[in-house]
Length: 191
Image (cartoon, rainbow, N blue to C red):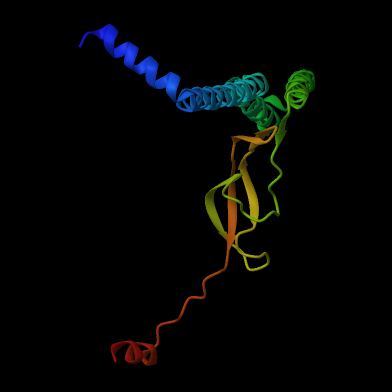
């Protein structure tokens, strides 16, 4: 039997049973429609994902630059403290002009930060939150609830809804009562 003979038999079967041919065509059509719908859904999901990534890149593109710029603000604060506390400079009549100039630069930098959504994290007298604070030391204090921030070592900052840098803080803890050693206490521990 040759190939042409086989084709003729297949054609004769399809002519005898046209429903088989229609079912095959309908199945192929359904399969093609399903593939098309899946492809369109994938394309839409990808478009949304790219749009979200583009928005985040635009919104947080300067995130690393902003984080590194915080060092400038820290250094300006240190310079101001240094000038104000230096005894040898207190008699200098131009010291106030220098301090005023540095404070103007600081205000401009803070203004630029605010325009770009960078805000200071307020932490004093707040409950310690590891998402925003980094505990650097514990301070014994029974006047405040344990876990309350009482000292700010370095300011923390947020950029919109993201943490740029945590606040380095001192947190309260209860004062431990020291037990005096007496002969009675030693006997109780030996048993």
